[in-house]
Amino acid sequence: MSEIKFGTCKFCGQCNWDLDCTNCNTVSEANNIATEACGCDEAKAYTARLKKYEATVAHIDNLFGVGAEEKGLISMSSNVLTYLHACAERIAYSDISAVTVQVARGCQARLSTNAKGQIKVERVETEKYQQQE
Image (cartoon, rainbow, N blue to C red; front, side, top):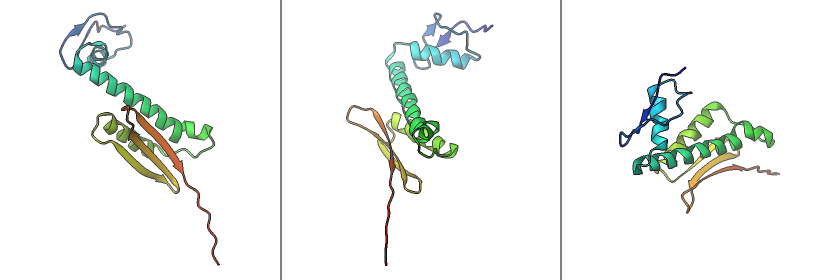
């Protein structure tokens, strides 16, 4: 049983004693839960970015990872997925607004921020057929 009873917001330092820390193995995990539950402006912004990032990672995995195979597409390597996750994090933190990556022959990954501030994930497959004499 966990002995961790509370967590502290990373931004304002407010202690939260009402946490469900049954799955917390470290103080850091408890502090993350406390930060997500805190009402300070910095914690709210952090939580919004975190949720945006987590949703984007799910979309990436759906289009380029295991979910791609379910759609009849080729899934990408774990290195490609790791890179796309890192790009998604930078977009979630507004360091960049868009990125296009050539992930395989004829396949591009496009991550961008739309007008509503949402992160859009696209997989573009291009097949080109050509004949010459």
